Length: 209
Image (cartoon, rainbow, N blue to C red; front, side):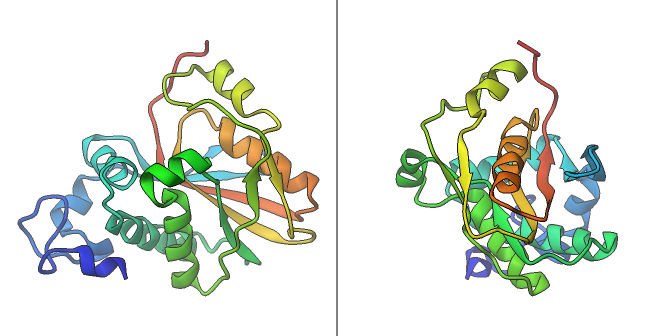
């Protein structure tokens, strides 16, 4: 699978040292800004972030999203599995992900959060399920302010086959939380028992407007 994309077992960040923990060398792991904190506090919908945005984490997520470097999904999946075990999160019925638009899937050939969610699901022994879809077109969130992001994805998703399920929702990047919150709303309306969010990176804050 994605393991085969690593060159000679070396660290894909520094390209110098042998890969160890999370498929990275110890030096690069030490230079990542681990978060592991709850970034959105609401009793019914907690969201956790693995990393804070810095030069290294940005390089990793941009590789997965824009350079077709699918092996980063394995790195993030391993980090998410480690966090899941460390935090002793409640058992889930399924790991799910934020969907991508049909246009982006055609261009990229895959959905980054889906690859991460699949890696995590395999690592922790929980089924991956594809339950969220767009019910209308939305603009790309890049470049939008917080209010614009919220308006853009308001009531944009629909879910199926989630009644009574406890779900772990995966996305690659948290900027304002608008997409995650819109997905959680759709899942709740479809009958999910609970939703917990987990994102790879907490991006730097954006303007309100």
